[in-house]
Length: 67
Image (cartoon, rainbow, N blue to C red; front, top):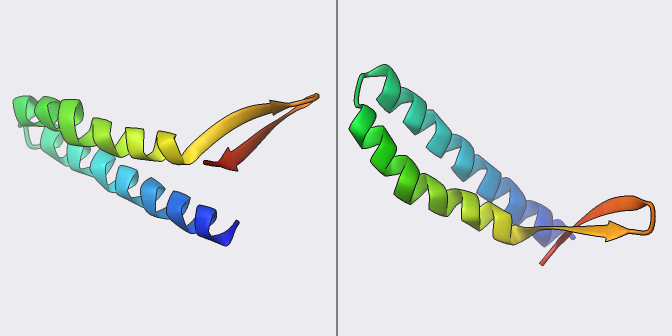
């Protein structure tokens, strides 16, 4: 479980940094560059996090577990 938590924290941090980069690009008026980054790099960061997290229904509750 500790390994899963560590992997998830790294992926969350990378996604957070990616979002900060998009914010910075937009703020500086580099919209085309921001869109390109979102379509490519940010999408990959999101997919990496998505692959780590799996939502699985459990009787009455929803459990989050690592793959």
